[in-house]
Length: 158
Image 1 (cartoon, rainbow, N blue to C red):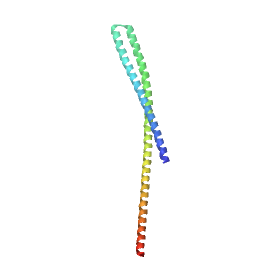
Image 2: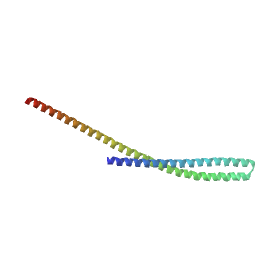
Image 3: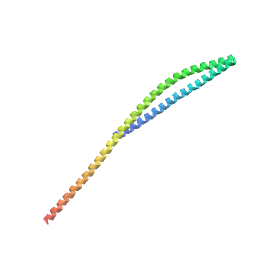
């Protein structure tokens, strides 16, 4: 019984660890998603700067074209940094996923062990209960048989 209680506490601990790994995985997935959104914003800014640059060239506005070109170059640099950051975060997310899957597996294994022990305990309890019931039945039968023999012996004496 004490072993089962210890295993149940351990199973609860594994469940808590699994939950923490799940939250960490969600956090890393969200971080990857945020970087992806930032990359999309930079992509949109790049297209906008490119479009503004073409419009400035057609209008002959050299100053506007230079600003658009500077913005385009800035977005390219930001996008490269964000791509690197996304790769780093994807690797971290991958590690977090592996940890989560491993903790999930450990939790399931512990649950399986606890369930198996509980089933064994229930079977043993039922077996003991049946043995006690069988012993009572046999004791009552012996008593009844012995009582019957005594009556037969008393009848023969009289």
